[in-house]
Length: 113
Length: 115
Image (cartoon, rainbow over all chains, first blue to last red; front, side, top):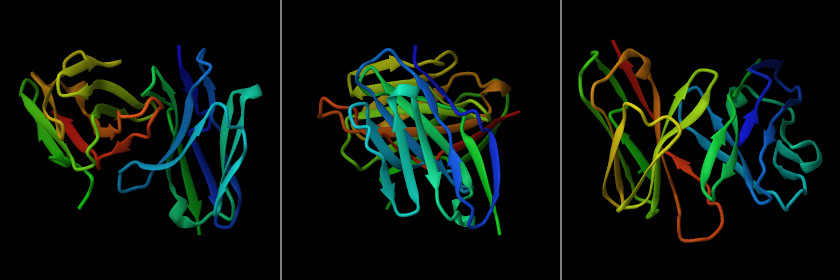
């Protein structure tokens, strides 16, 4: 069975600090995809990244970076120099059966000025 | 205009009432999904549809039904609402043309309160 664990339910940092959100997953599939979504206070879900299981290269997009390690079944998300606008709930998700998603419980990030 | 829209955005109803949540998309995607979000539980799949004639139950379908009226429209119904169906409901779509896992794009959500 697929499972996604986001052990950090809530993180609070001060603006300009770096912060890493952890995501650990379980799957028996050899081919799968991992996703991160952002849910700002307004409530919508914003897609951030999709990564397939064959591509373990880290990815950087501006202040955001993602570290995928199959050996530890982790797909962690780092925000460098956090800003107040980064305050949101972040969800990690794992695909299965081709197009189904299993979500983690989410991590609420609060960035204080 | 938003690619995925949901109506209503907010709804308060009473126990036992029938309620319908609607989802429309202009992305031209074949696949549509309904999820509910509860605090600490992330999003859980209620129903999904890979085309107009294909409807499938998800993880938590009890107490819900759906209708795929067209490629662009997917409705979720609560036949007899109960308080533990109070949640944030999301519709999502994805492109079904390719043999890889496509990204799901979400609507703005419907906040439903059952009193």
